[in-house]
Image 1 (cartoon, rainbow, N blue to C red):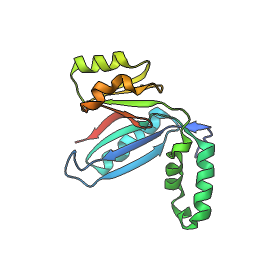
Image 2 (cartoon, rainbow, N blue to C red):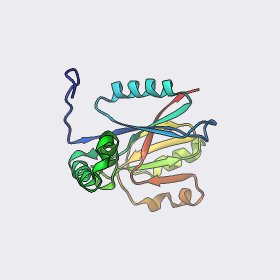
Image 3 (cartoon, one colour):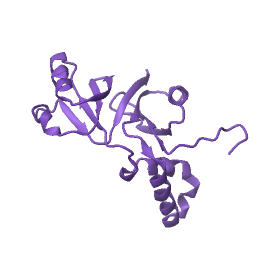
Length: 176
């Protein structure tokens, strides 16, 4: 660690995921993952980073916090099994944090792929507790505690709603 680098210690963290998709614009697909230490500062740094790379980027944040101790154990085992990964330890650490066993909580991401306010309001009314709402380019993301998903069966069948048990909530779009 450099002399000017601040130590950061936490039992759990969120991650930002920046994705440049070739279906948004003809461009090479890329993904950047970043552990969040300070949400505002890290988001601004990530925005500047993807602006320099060019293209259209979507930035997401993990819905569920990630526990560091199980990730540490996963990382150590991975490095014992594959010592050649030591040269890319930052990337392997972010991969470790994204493992299923590292989820701190069991929040759901409800992805509504329509801007039809009638449908959006019906879905919102059926959700037991909405912790966070975010407008997306094609609709809305709702973060909830886990619940009996059968209440959304009508919307699941017609493809309007997708339930992700460990997803990424839309944060913003950057670029052209």
